[in-house]
Image (cartoon, rainbow, N blue to C red; front, side, top):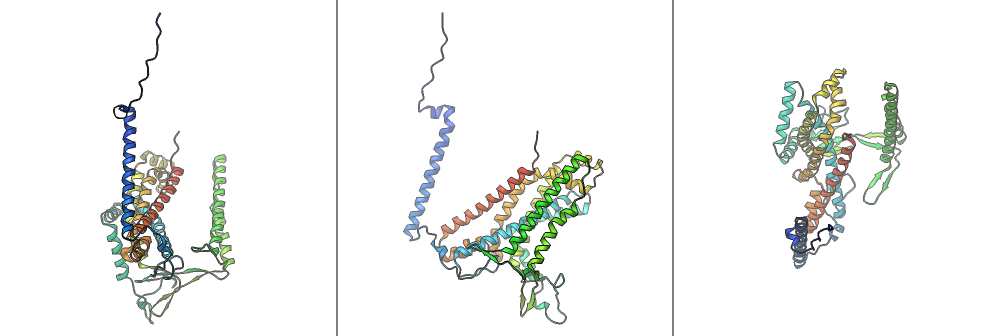
Length: 417
């Protein structure tokens, strides 16, 4: 009588790290990681030694020194006597301003152009094609300089608004002035202001906080009304008309707050050789905003077009069979389904627009690159510190955009069974 026994397990040998496929990939990864860490350590150590020999050890104390330069376009209070840290913060806000405005305008223009490229009107479709090909195939830096030149050369100067028969006039009931120095728009003011809340780095208007709080509550109310209308539709098959109620929930409380705060507009006025009052938007900001927006919109248009074409034609035919018009088919049937195709590449375009804003220095717009990576770096001689911080800022902004858009993508993507 014989018994079956398990074969003895082979003992581990060092040669198995090379010849055994179970361990080989792990060995390669460990060796590569060790080599990378050693190379990084050597590079960092060599850099620190060279900086020490030059008398420039890593030091961020320069942020406390006076900046001694002006920033012409700013969202918060700033003077040349403020520190380099304050100047970098002002530049960061300018970067975020261009990024937010650019992404918003690029999305609107891109979606519109992408839809019109599929229009049955031959002329409209060809015009949109020319727009896309023209903007995509010219470097964005040239577009920035081009828009800046157009604004300076084609718009009237402030002196053209003077005299009994001026060559130029203000727009929108004399509330907006468009000049070759910039655009002046009305400024919201409050005669019974709640004041400002100081956060150390900047001040927050309590009036704006109150308005946003009331607006947020109104939007929450409209969402509740829409959900209730949806439940009624599921129960009865008929959706009640609620647009006027949702509009009232948002508009009336905001109007009440504005009246209580004494809201009025501060209009720009021509005083001396230039306009005074209102909100001043310099041509450098406008040129950068328009160039980045229209350039990125050309890429977004192709993304939107591809997303629409990815939807089966049967969806359009089924919606048309139900009696829906083409506009309703696009907004209710096609675009909601196309979002799952559009959103992922759209994230890359938002990131590209944000990073392309670093070209702002070409037209004199002081963003984070112009402040921290420009004048501050030249004045202090702290090249490594400034560049590392600049890279970290753009990395953080890109990661925040990616997280927000990926979260939105998970909300709109189709849930498959």
